[in-house]
Image 1: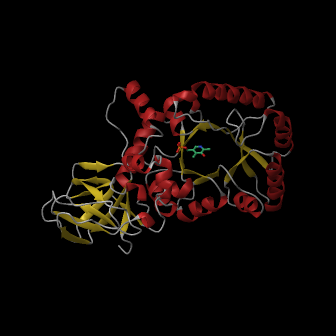
Image 2: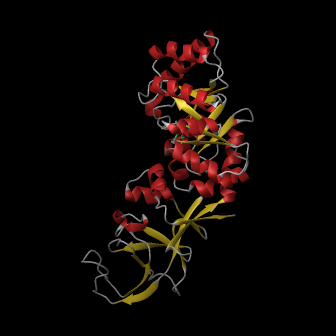
Length: 384
Ligand SMILES: *Cc1c(COP(=O)(O)O)cnc(C)c1O
């Protein structure tokens, strides 16, 4: 390993999570694997081939550059790619040429897609996104007659691949009323399209939280991000699943483990300070280990005197400030720690696990943010 730490991605954890998802969603529902944000920090280049090997054939991304990377990383000619957010200009032609489908939520893009399709000589595969109450992207109902008109008059260029929407916070029961209204609005507008003689190939509305919590939102396809990586969208989502299924153990397994190794060990005398300044005083003679990871590597400074890592299967404390490239940990309770011994910042060692969420609680980040912020220059390595 050239970097001072590495991030392992577990194949068998992904297999486990996909099996769980398939069982929950049933055979009729297509699972699209959401790989925006560098596949939630796992790396598109590492994750996509792995997911393909586990049977995934549909990927969702935010923009054209991510779609390009998925395309480069994929090897199965059947693999389908869907852009949910930004695409414009010449990217539209590229997407159409390559059979990549994309969301449409404004008329200009729809008109440009029509142009691009004519130029390329292939149909644009469109997902019409509806505004149902999130007030982000999505066609308002007042725009739909024009959308329907375009679809009906250009069936050769504009292929109605999907009708979709996104919920404004399905991971929290506090949003129940809002989500319910969104579901109702979506179903109403779907009927409207049918009344126009327009039927999409796929209807899709659910992210991980909605797919688990509100089964009717699954429809033809679910867009699953965080769950496939082994995390619940929120603690509440897991509790809800647990109550309904009677299962108290978490059926998901985390794919990521973040590991480094001991760079040096030394003794500190009673009454000495450790590291910069006076933030940590040795109250007794102690032994410490120096680990070559710091805030430059994504180990937040707010973990100073707070964080925990695993060494020899035991939880040990970060002492003093987190530096740019190093931390000191207290190993006084351990025997025989040596240079080169494995250090786990996130993941399992022996019977112990340090979760992303306990790491996140200390550094005040949610799972989604923490994962996508794991620095990209840390090597990702697929393991069984
Ligand atoms: C990110 C995203 C998802 C996946 O969300 P998870 O909570 O990670 O499952 C689904 N749909 C859209 C439109 C998204 O942007």
